[in-house]
Image 1 (cartoon, rainbow, N blue to C red):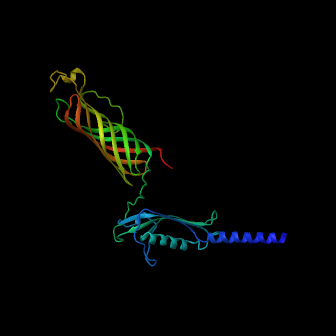
Image 2 (cartoon, one colour):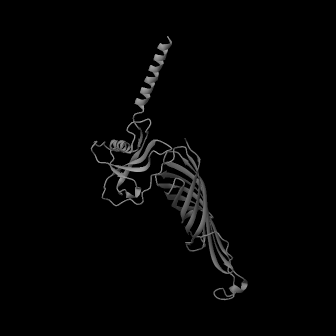
Image 3 (cartoon, rainbow, N blue to C red):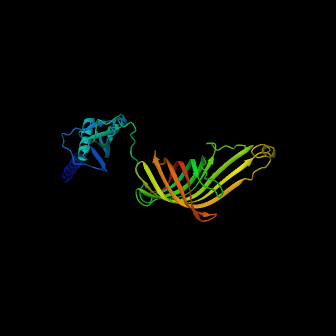
Length: 330
């Protein structure tokens, strides 16, 4: 009886080992395809690149593949077999090029191979090399909420104060704070409060003004925009409400105004405060998922204070923006 049980136990262990060994004979292949073409035949040539800067400009990223194996568990676990499997994945997607991002070989710490690569479709191998290759960024998922902090640092204004000629001041400094909510995977609503200035020095340092005529402009604005985010660009459009403050001031002791053109008369400072509604447009280039540089164009259409009338003005800003992820779906 004991001998029969022992034989049955040995048989069960052998079956388990055989099933495990059989199921583990092939390397693990994980491929993600976002765009595909007609599959290619097995004898189709697949080009290999290891440096992104070597890739021709005329190409498209079809997806990614990851292939891994362990020499102690898998058969055909060597660099040649790994790349042959990767080429098979390229042909299945209709691609013709493999860009290796990572290739890990066995070491004394592990006995495994791992290949991570992009599957590409190159349309013209004779086109110039793409020295500006940048991996595409993934757009956030629906429901994601970001805190936006940016510096609309270079500003150019156009406004017409009451009783004055149209003014076109330009300068530096600004700040903007907002919240972005992704209502789809590639569109988000942005609500923000910003301020732009025409400070005449590009760094925020104090300056003592002794005498002369000086013009100052600043604008505080509230905006709501809908934005379309692509892998590397974000385009926005919406509405704005702004409070624009302009002043022209005379500085100096009374003696400064004795000569021409003042002739002893110190002019009065001039000031204008306007409130307007208008539009908002923006475009940003995303260097990373958190940092971008862009241009904000905010045209005023209707002035509602000091009196309601059509009065065009604008603020154009070069914006340096950062995003801080508050919440996203896992």
